[in-house]
Image (cartoon, rainbow, N blue to C red):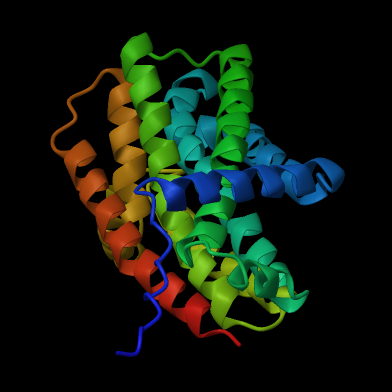
Length: 267
């Protein structure tokens, strides 16, 4: 009787393995940021510049005073800041890793295909936190007050960061599909403009022209801004938080699998 060799044991898959690998790669992304902070500084500081410019350009004409307009404007800039911090850098960083052959090394490792993408996005959460902290500090100095209370303020910040996390998967997909980093940056910025500015950011949607008001009414960024505005100003939420959470789920479960599939097909 011929003895047969035992079948090789398959490596055990740890339930939290993909998350652990993603956190390791997130630390790598943050280390890269420390050595080249220019793009992140731009993404973090730009929302604060928008806050100051919009406040003093439109405050008196829209609300009659900069004090009243700040209460309206700040929640919109908060959502814009979280989205901008991720949309400017995430897709570009992933594209550069693909172009420079770094992802080929990742594919040779026994890690999930999700880990390199999720790691980059998790690193962006640190950037979101930094940007949100700077915005709140600047807004407080300018006179903004969270009338909804500390808990509502934290909830608004958390909702903005969650929305930014889910929205960043759009640029992750762009970064994987487009070959050139400059094209990724340009395409992400073009995507950013109608999403972030065609909203209730600077003025209520009912004061906008019909075509723009119609777009702003269905824009998920508008719902996120209205939800944060209601939380921070202590006004009735009226389902805006629930709508924003639904949009977050749609963005994440819609674009994350597409990005992972496109990343897995890269040669």
